[in-house]
Amino acid sequence: MKLYGVQAVVINSRQMRDADRVLTLYSREKGKIQAVAHGVSKPTSRKRGAVQPFCHSEFLLRRGRELDTVSQCEGRDIFPGLWSDLDRMGCAAQVCEPVDGLTVDREPNKAVFDLLLGTLRKLETVTEFELTVRGFELQLVALLGYRPQLDYCVNCGNGSLNPVAAFSAASGGLLCKSCAVGTDEVLCSGETAAIMRLLLDWDPVKMDRLRVSIRSRNEMRKVLREYLQWLTEKRSRSLHFLESISDYRTPD
Ligand SMILES: [Zn+2]
Image (cartoon, rainbow, N blue to C red):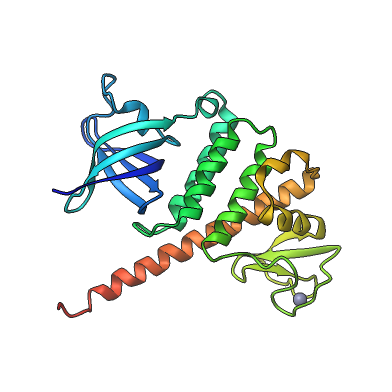
């Protein structure tokens, strides 16, 4: 059986039978991978530290028929600053979840890996961790080809979005006041749209200097929650469709 090495962040981990766990890794070399780590739930396991959620580790994996298995692993960053603070830990989970939900197994994207690892490192130290997560979410969807349209109304092209506009997840961008008639849209003021434009292109380190009102923070959280949810559901719908048509394909 073939062995291969990757560096990866543990983005999800679930208990299997006995002391085994199935890890979801986001690797630099191969994108998302599912791998079984045998015996890691035992307190004596030497691999235990390197397979914890959020951990950035070096893995030696063995190719399996269905799932690969962890042959060796060594932790590079175990992020004690995230584990010692519940708020930061919650932010780290919010960062890992959309990477899992929006990516496909074995489709590498180095920019996504760098963004994920860079954001986890920043979350250990920055004071403005809420905006760091929002910036991450925006940059992640942009890297995956879903950059939201925040400059003008996606329906009529109107560029004057003040004072109040809406965000439509299904349309992937802002709607002006006259076009926003649906019930599934989320309120998104001109101020919120302007901050989201900044976060799309800014280095998260600079976010400590940004002043953002509570109202805009709340709007942004709702806009991005809707958008991420919509994109995740869209991806699982298309996977489901591909699975359903694969039944009809004639074998080679
Ligand atoms: Zn419009």
